[in-house]
Amino acid sequence: MTDHHKPYRTCAFEGCCGRRNGSVRLIDARMPELARCLTLFQYVQAITGGPVARIEQAGSYAVPSLLGEAFAVRPGSIALRIDGGSVASAVVARDEDTGTVALSLFDADGRTAHQGRLLSEGDRLLAGLAGTVTPGLRAAGPSTASAAPAVPAVPEWESGDQLAQLDAVLADGGVARRAAFHRYRGEHRAIEADVVPAVLDHVCSVGLPVGIAVFGPGAMQACGGRVHVTDRTVGGRVFAAIADSSVEIDLAGVRACRLVRSTAAHGPTSALELDDGDGRCVAVVTQFGMVGEDVHTAWEHLAASLPDA
Image (tube, rainbow, N blue to C red; front, side, top):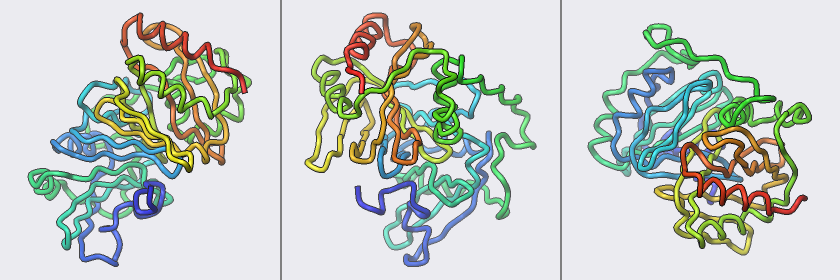
């Protein structure tokens, strides 16, 4: 991954900066306004992640969810989950030289939480219909002007299910959770991060579907399905094509890996959590939703076979 493809940097889309001939419009990053905007687009290259883990998917957005809400990964749709308290702004940037248009979500520190590059001319025209907002408008969860129901409270992760674990990671990269992980009531153990490529190779070879979630600052993008192909570079980067998505992991940047079991649709379900050098969880490999008892059993058998660190 080259530098201009790192969504964690301050300006992930080159059209945002003055070196190019382009325009930038600040739009409403609050729900449900943001959801209405994203679901307008039919063909988007959606990107979430940073230097250690990154996910891309081309397609259309499912309705994005907020912390505490229900979450599903469905074939053919971009599954995005947002921490409304962390996402501070959203911009639509157009590069007049190339005609490219991207919608980017930023946190309060200017880091890119998520980016959607609009791939069709129709979507680029639709982006012009998104209403602008006054600078300084905070994207603190749902809009007060909306009639949307209140967002449910986020369950405590110590005894929570799979989604509670994902939300604890989404809230702050999982730093607070990891610091107090001795309080977690489910099964968990440290494993070697080097097993991740072997896990992906195995599920690819036997046709076992798998789910992967990748985290940015305030956003999580997830995919699920069969792994079509895997690859590993000399430098330690691992690539996997999963359903309609591609996932890239820099193993050199992974400092720890834990196998964590939490309750999901088929009962206790294992997840491989990958942490970077700052102790932030950057990716989770698991099973999402109803995948069938045979798939769940095969995944749990594989997880149980992984050696301790």
